[in-house]
Length: 384
Image (cartoon, rainbow, N blue to C red; front, side, top):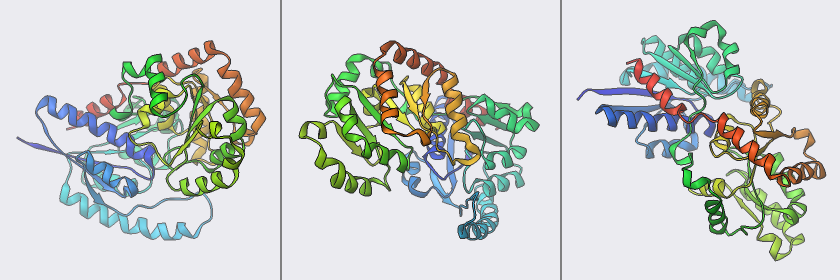
């Protein structure tokens, strides 16, 4: 049996790695259906996601990663040399694997690997999740056979290659996709109990992306007493911020709370297997506007309050949020408007109107594209 070699690359955050995993899951499924053996390898710097890639049967080949910062920093000098080194490193390592096809999710480190593949005439598919494609995607679009986008608005940024552009949406891992049984009132009731929350009180799920969001974390701490008078809060703090957050919570917030109110708050560094439970239980999601976060919220049909990161590259988070808002699926609150009474009034207004929450939920479900990972995987295999 001929083995097909597929190279995947992309990195910097869960927003790059998790969609890669989603597409790999579909490639593996399609491979089994057709009796095709696949050798899928990740090239790049997976950072803390290396073991997660390996758990999916993906071999990791490390290539130096570099990042272009849009502000003055000594690290730009360091990363210039990393980038210079990554070019021969990528050429050498790609040569010894010599893939039949390559798939890039963009992000730091992907440019050298994609260009190495182009040098060896390997057919390339790229995907960008955001409403405004990133620098890596814009650079590598010229060598890609197929350019996949998460948002239709991204087409204008790669208009020179319009005949190669498709808009499948954003791929989501199988473990993060809801089953019909997860979306019932009974499931939500049981999930709250499993998380040790009271089923009768609304539950806010607060997520700041895979790395957390310091501004949102601080806002929650400063307004926690008032929030817990109204609802319960399940808060993903971020792995790197968790210890500092809990120290601040124990020093400032906890002493002001009664035991009953303390039971209404739970902070976690990062959702692992509890992710499905958290989304099943949530009545309203408060989140940053990363593309992966938005499409996961949409997959679960959850009404949401979206807080864009103001200094994101090309202001892509604000554009992600605006397009999701135009679909009628969320409420946007700018970071500069994170003022206790204002935010709580907006949340109270949403929770007081179940019909509005229902409408947002329906619009979120319409926004989601459940076949994104499958369609991208089929496009990758079509180039063989």
